[in-house]
Length: 410
Image (cartoon, rainbow, N blue to C red; front, side, top):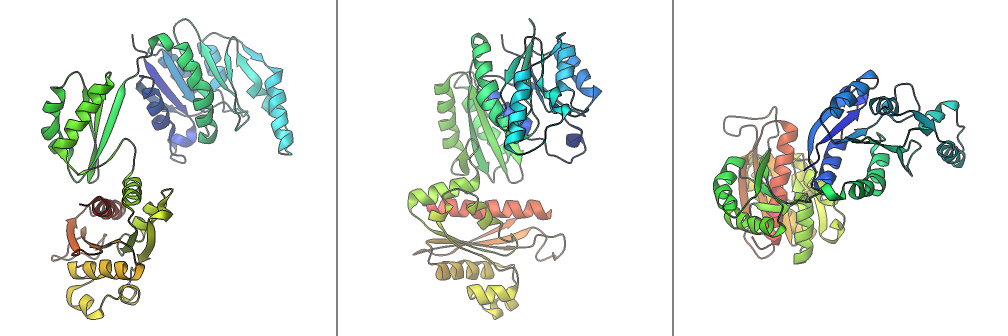
């Protein structure tokens, strides 16, 4: 019988939008590796709402994971709420306070009496060591449910989860864990309904497999899940053959990571020339470790004069056709290839909006140029989302995909 899992994220700052909640994604992915799925997640403010969330979760869940509320201040009441919900007394552990005192002393801070709250542990609770902060994590349980209490800051929560909580769960629930296997295929430029039409019936005919879809601007993920790893691999191979090379990566690999990986494998060097994306293409490439082996130059030629001075785009070309044109995209790409000495260069010029569009050249219009040594320059025209930030990301995604395909021989 599978475990019912719920997550309670605590913190008024999460509900005020002052802090982005990254815990759900991290914990859900980790739990999935154990064969567990989060059935419910709730975010509550500091204070009495934590106790209410505990009571509700205990009525449904076998495993409750709580983040935040373990600090020393008056609004940190997670341990108290857990103690009450499980009917356990809080017991002072002097060795925990001694450890906190040592950490304060090491950093030359003065410890106050409020820190004692962090040394209180529900009776029969398990203490999870916190090497990156002062508040220890806790495990509280009865004959029906287990609650894992984790600190709120990600720099404390994540190592505690990986090194303390996860091993404990593997051991405690060993008889009830049935790992599942999953492959996610990342698809650019094809909608989820089109992918479903292409693959779902054929994939489901292979055996008991779960097929899921997740759409994002201009792209989507195809998710395949089954208990049998061989079945998942077979389904993924079939999907690849049906969908084709619009699949740019697998699992959590990003487009920029795929570009650096493929370029490095092919021994190719890259350059970028950007206008409307403002350097986003180059920034994404250089976010990837190892990109220095493949990335040569990046130009942000936002002003027309910069296109002329830096890339040799003729002023009369811009005057005749406009900065957003296939002719200028070609000249930018060829200029970047020439000036950088790279093997492949991509250029992008478009209208990000919300102003600047015309009937002839509407908002969202963008041209890409792809120049490659020994090959004819390729021009690609797209009409993307007009919302400025979304437009920039989608344009950078297309530019990166052009580099990926060029490096892989496409």
